Each structure stands twice: as structure tokens, then as C-alpha cells.
Image (tube, rainbow, N blue to C red):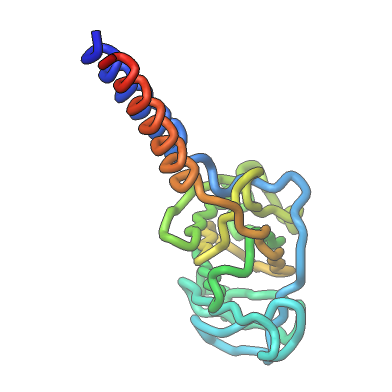
Length: 211
């Protein structure tokens, strides 16, 4: 009888631990995207790496390192990022905040080279290394598509380590970030606390059954 009770307690504890530590979504598509504007200090010509600054136009503001697949030209300010010439394809941009604890949201606007395809893939890696994937479809063209982006999911305190957007872009512009929420206890911390409580309950039950 005692062995069965202890086995039931162990199975229950493991189930609770698995439920508590199951990874919930860290980010989700933002139905109303927006945030703090990212500026580019200087106009750039024929580059594949440069920097942006969230909230202002110089490096006293949080820095975003940007790399591209396909060389680009940029304006200065809250400006466009475009392929260097008509023979250059801009297929990917990666945005990496130098402080990976700051931002929980990301959004942008732009225009696609291949209007018939109309799709953008977004990959976001959170601080800690977990990566999630999102697809935006039916964006069409030839006009600019409406602002799209992701934000931290309800209950998540995830912050952005890096974001990569992939498509065939005619231009990318009006990039914005938002600050991440305040930290809360992680699920693993709560699970450990729950296991501890079950352990005390199991110990008490075992003592009562031994009498």
C-alpha cells in the first residue's frame, strides 16, 4: 500500500513538473504592431552591415546591429533600406540588439520584389537561445504592405536576442522595437517549488502510513 502511494506521488510530481516546464510560446504575431522608431545615423551606400538606434539618431540610444544578404543603400533617419541596384536582391535582414534584455516587440513595413509571392518569414531568437518562426502571407504588391511584426506572448517575459526577416524585398523601412516586460519567476522555478511541496506531502504521508 505504501509503495503504491509513493508511486502515485512520484507520477503526480513528474506530471506536474512536465506541465510546469512545458515551453509556452515566447512570442506571437502582433495584431496591432508598433513601437519606438529605429533611426539610422548616416546614409549608407553599398553595405551589408550597419547600425540603427532605437529612439534617436545617434549612439547614445540603444544600438541595433544590422546585417543583410544582398548589399543595400540606406537613408539617414527613420528611413528606407533598399537593394544597391536593380541587379541586387535583398533577401534577408538580421537585427541584433546589442543589449538582448531590452526589447520584446519588433515591427516594420516594406515592399516585396516578388508581389505574386507576397510572403515574409520571420525568425526570432530570444535571450537564452530559443528560436520561434512566423510567416506573414498574402502581402502582395506593388504598394507597400501594412506594418507587420511580433511581440512577447501574454505571460512571457522574453526579450529579443536577434530577428531575421526573409523574402525578396524591394525595400524595408520604418523599423520599430518596444521594450520587454518586467521579469517574473520562470516556469522552471515554479516547478521546482511545486516538487518541493509534493516532497513534503509525500514525506508526511509516508510517516502516517508507517504508524
